[in-house]
Amino acid sequence: MSIKKFGSAHWEGSVKQGRGKVSTESGALADQPYGFNTRFEGVPGSNPEELIGAAHAGCFSMAFSMMLGEAGFEPEAIDTQATVTLDPDSLTVTGVHLDTTARVPGCDQAAFDQAAQGAKDNCPISKLLNAEITLDAKLTG
Image (cartoon, rainbow, N blue to C red; front, top):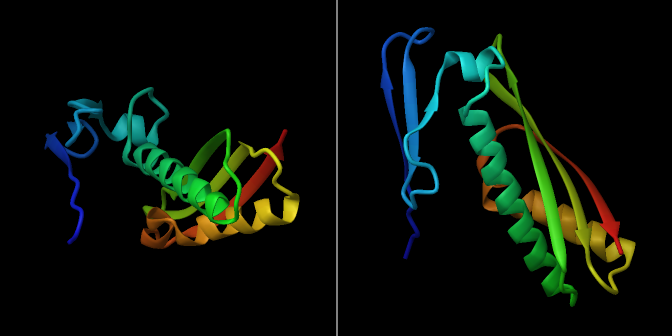
């Protein structure tokens, strides 16, 4: 049985002067405004790339926890930032850089690195994206 989740968007007007709103099924986002200026001109507000970044960071962190667990380690904390790069000329997402720090008691560097790489390669959002995905992973405490 497949799991299906949805997000939705409403847009009004031209691409540069128009405005949109995005929402999620859970209500975590409800009519969050976005527009050309928040996406391409640095104006504060949401945009599709930051939403992809949040989704990728969340997916990677869960997958990393699973991979560590399969290796016999339980993480105390995993913090991940996913930076999405959009080429404004080609309007293509060209890359995502995952920067993660994890506190994993008793975990050695080799097991940590293997779990991080496995999560990067196999989380569902990584598999979805047609972009170069890079990773910096730091083991603490």
